[in-house]
Length: 81
Image 1: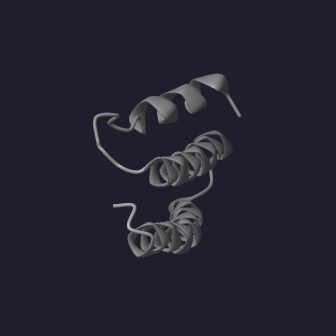
Image 2 (image 1 turned 120 degrees about the horizontal axis):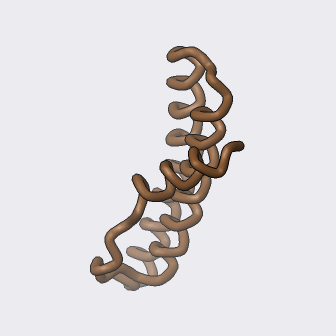
């Protein structure tokens, strides 16, 4: 993966740090952000067609969505909101 592609995607994905959210949620979001950066950089470097790019992105959001929902629901159930 070219360094320039990774840097480009990382800059585009910078999260606002001023949000007041529980650390567990912040950690979960950071993990998902890292996964998206890695996948995006690989897609930039690999040159797949639009259908393949859309499929990879769909899969990434689908798998990350499940974990994010679990994290949010657990925080709400434990009163950590």
